[in-house]
Image (tube, rainbow, N blue to C red; front, side):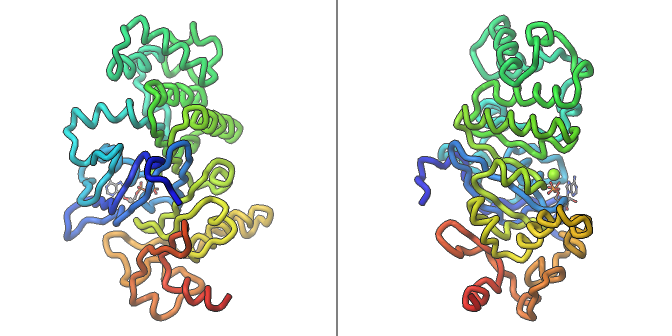
Length: 330
Ligand SMILES: Nc1ncnc2c1ncn2[C@@H]1O[C@H](COP(=O)(O)OP(=O)(O)O)[C@@H](O)[C@H]1O
Ligand SMILES: [Mg+2]
């Protein structure tokens, strides 16, 4: 279905570990996915399942003892894992823009807003300092900062959380990247501001025809913004499909449970009771399916055999031993 030319980023078998082989934890375990031009791919799953580690591995921004131990990340046919630090610095910011959760820690408190955006621009383009400053004003206006010509001289602490996130988005898009990675971009913000920031990201992604990898644990946001959805559980992808299929024909019991939590929002008791039990310790995951200890449909075989992600239909992959049976049941 997918034209290869539409793929901007190709991630294959990405495997990331914190710590050594004996005592460490493999927190991203053989993850493969593609991002498509002009499309938004949501990466969802409970806290600790490896979403941020996946994004940081792609960007090569993991802090030790985190380490990518296997896999490829191809951008335009080039494997980013083989680039030098200098080449990777060039990719970050220019070809892949990033927006992180906490806009305060991502901004330098000692630099004016204009200087931080101009810094990205002068590092990655031929613009002069003057031109970069003018571009910073244009970018701030574009992301909805009022009176940008004056505010460009202000420092991060002069801005509200929502405005700081707009500044970071301006920096992320300053070099017109083909890919934007946003990791829980609104988690630190007031609820009323969240929707505005997501709307801004959505509008920019559409206007730039960029690929957006949107990491979130909010399925309402996924429904509103995503074209494709990847569901992670305990370091692995357990299901991926286009957004309609995932919401209307989920196949993995974990995806079904996540969706049931959202449907329960009208029903307070259900909404307050997320999926029972805890995700496994990634230092010592259970044999068989990692979701088996919490799975309402679990069978004996699930505790012995490890399901691999496999095509269920044309653009729908599931890692569950029971999906074949379920299809047979109707
Ligand atoms: N610096 C670190 N050292 C050791 N383990 C870590 C570190 N950072 C994250 N982890 C572990 O990696 C796993 C995935 O974390 P993360 O990618 O942050 O999850 P998510 O973003 O989905 O909430 C978790 O089990 C977490 O405990
Ligand atoms: Mg995270």
